Amino acid sequence: MSQQPTPPPAPDVTAPVRRLDAAELPACLSLSKDREWPHEDRKWALLFEVGEVYGIDAPDGGLAGVVVATRYGTGVTAISMMLVAERFGRRGLGRRLMNHALEHCRTDSFSLTATDDGRPLYERVGFRTTGLCFKYTGVYRPAPQEPTGPATRPARAGDLPAVLALDAEVFGAPRDQLLRRLQTFGEDFRVVDGPGGIAGFGGCWRNVDNTVIGPVVAQDTAVATALIADLAAGAGGECRLDLEDRKPQLLDWAAAHGFTAGSTTAVMVHGADLPGDRSRLFTPVMVALG
Ligand SMILES: CC(C)(COP(=O)(O)OP(=O)(O)OC[C@H]1O[C@@H](n2cnc3c(N)ncnc32)[C@H](O)[C@@H]1OP(=O)(O)O)[C@@H](O)C(=O)NCCC(=O)NCCS
Image 1: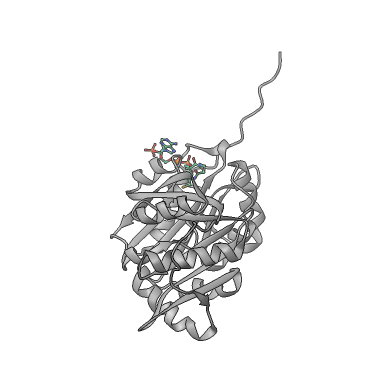
Image 2 (image 1 turned 45 degrees about the horizontal axis):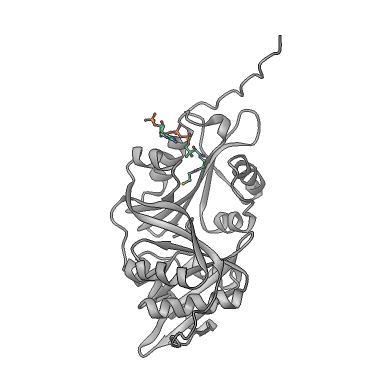
């Protein structure tokens, strides 16, 4: 008679949640591989720099679960990379990690985008759905006979204070450290000049097999699409845009310029409504960071 393999011992739901450091990035990548997520090493490296990575050890080695919390002052924490190894699923580890992040960060609001797998857990700990986020990918293609949009130009070091001021107004919580880091982490960072200062800014960064266009902050859709078009044209090849259903004009623009909608996630918030003026926030840096 063939013997059944022994199931792995489960970590206790009271197993300690501990802060991980960047040396444990390979263990995070192994865990993401377990859930068939891509090998996003640059993204993880940035998350370790700007966020707090928490994990629970697996009794058979490596990590049983992980979550990333990126805090912007006392206003907003972006939650991301919530992962529990398949063999330890549905035993309370996800909830334990999330409760740890909520209790530890204590910001007015928490935000995330949820896969279908993650959403039931988030609802149970008090997140509410506020919208949908669509992942668009493709190679940018200008539309024929399109009127020229506002001119964009590469950002200069001297633009940074204006970029940070506009971002603080729109995002409603300080992303200074992240935006400063993007100046070198990213491939390109552009601004549009307006009569009273900058009318918008946008950046892009290289992930495993595409260039992510974000963040894009702009006074209106015309400025946002000018930034996205120039960033995507400059990047060449496959690009990714994370677009929310609250921006239907931008969804139409993306579809008309070479992008196709892929997976959908739910935009979820815990605590107070998100601060700032989100009508001028067109794409996040990445969904993991807001
Ligand atoms: C989502 C994920 C992190 C959940 O982790 P987990 O450790 O299995 O979740 P828990 O056992 O702590 O579940 C917490 C609660 O949510 C419920 N729940 C969790 N996943 C569920 C699912 N897929 N469907 C229905 N309920 C679910 C549990 O029943 C539990 O409720 P209860 O405490 O009232 O019984 C895990 O399934 C995972 O890693 N999935 C793949 C990666 C992923 O999609 N992550 C989410 C990214 S947004």
